[in-house]
Image 1 (tube, rainbow, N blue to C red):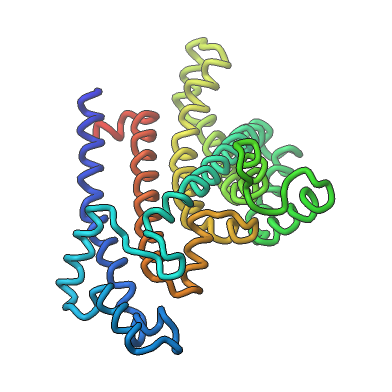
Image 2 (image 1 turned 90 degrees about the vertical axis):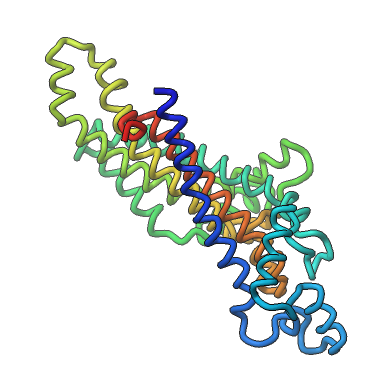
Length: 315
């Protein structure tokens, strides 16, 4: 079984190679999709002709597309994503500084989603069509319907301005300040995900509880707690783990709004600032790193899925 799982992981890694190639082509062509002269757009209308030509030469825009892509890939293999026009720093250095914050935010939001959604989903399934089930499903519907930025502003007003429990923005300098600064944005980012996973877990557990193999396990005299843990909850987690991983990828890609509202120095906020500042080397770098993170999350998801359901590995 271990060898089959290793082969499965290697197969998934090999499938990532063509996807990475397509991503690099799309990210490379991003600067060429811009109408007009990219160098002029980056520097602005007031830039001198000499400055524009110098930037074109620096970015290799005077070469053919094939040569430019070759230079781009050569730099990428050396982890050289260029230099930021706005910050005058290597793009890789900027991303490394911002990456830890975005990853910490996403992991904490994922933890909140799992802690809240799975117990509530089981509680709703155990009280199907009763008051707790109706209340939980109603709360999930509200969480899915309310815009993220509106929830973020309400949390800031209540817990930062009124109660002064958490900071208004930023994430401080010490580990404790980092944690306090991430609680509100992580909770905001996790709400929609928690609602989706809770509904999925509730429906999965209800369906599995009615299945034949659960009735057969109970007819054999297996204790209810064992049936609940080994047969119902474990099988109900399979689809929830898949959904959670998909939402983790969505949280990484959609963290820009949360980071902007809470003024967090993450990759999402950096991308927004770079787009408005026409800093396209940074935009290219953030897209590459974000795409790679999402692919790694999907890979980890497949590994966890194969651990929960060995049939996936055998297939």
